[in-house]
Length: 344
Image (cartoon, rainbow, N blue to C red; front, side, top):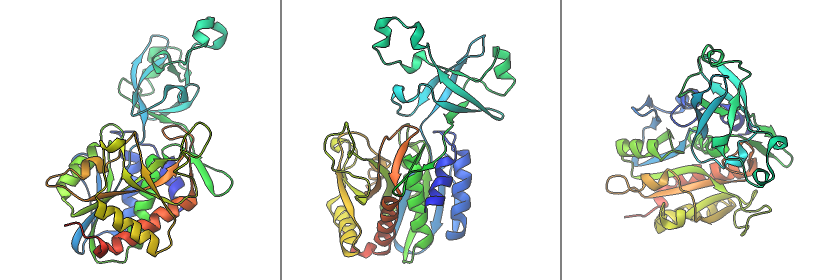
C-alpha cells in the first residue's frame, strides 16, 4: 500500500492535464478489469463484469496546480491558480513547469528587506508572486517550450515520517486512487464494478459528472480524503489520524452530499461487523465527486469513504498508512457485501 501510494502521489497531473497519472492508473488497473477505456473527457474507466447491482467506485486523479499566465521581458513568469490554494502555502515553493520538457523554477516575491512596514504586516497574495526559472529574457523561457497555458505542479516528493505516516503533495486524492485500486485488485464478490479515475475534480467535479452519467451505476462510493482536525489551530478533534476510515454523513453543510441513511447504515454495519475502526464526518466546507454523482439521472445512492489528512491543499499533506489500509479494507468488504444495502 505504501509503495503504491508513493508512486501515485509523486506523479504529476494538475486538473485538465492528468496524462501522467492516467497512464500509471491504467497500468495498475489493466490486469484486474475486463474492459479498460478512456472516455471523451479523459476519465479512466475499468469495468469488471458481474451481476447486479453495478457499483461505481471513484477517485479523482487531478491535483491542484498552477498555470502560466504571462511571461515578462526579463523572463519572470506570472501564474494563475488551478484549484483551491491558500496563497501563503505557495511562496518560496519549488515548482515544475511542464512545457516541451520539465523545467524547474521557484516562486518568488519582493523580499522582506525591501518591504515597507505596512507591507510586512500583510500576507503576500499570489498575484504579487512570480516564477523564476533562471531565465535572462522572455526568449530564454520560450526556447524551453514554456508558453501561456503551460501547466505547473509542485516539485515535491513523498517523505516517510515516524509512526508509519507520510507527507507529500497530491495525497488529495492519490490516497483515494490507492484505496480504489486495492479494493479492485482484491475484490472477491459478484457485483459489476466500475472503477473510475476522474478528471478535474478540483475545478468543479467535472469528470465525475460525465462518467456517472455515461455509466449510470446502481450505487456509487467515492474514495477521498477528509480534513483531520486533531492538531493545533483546529477546533473539534473529531477526525483524527489513526482513528480509522472516515464515513461521510454530510458535507458542505448539506449543500454537497447528505448520505442516504441506507448507504450510511450499510457502510457502518460493514465496519462494525469486521472490526474496522471508523469515524463519522459532518463537514461544513468542501465537497467531493459524490455531490454530482448522487444527483445523476434519477439519482444514484452514493457514499464516501475517506482517509484523515492534515494540511490539505498544500505540498506537505500528511496521512497515516494505517488509515489508508482501513479505508481500503472497508471499501473492499462493502462492495463484496452489497446485498446488505437496501435503498429502494
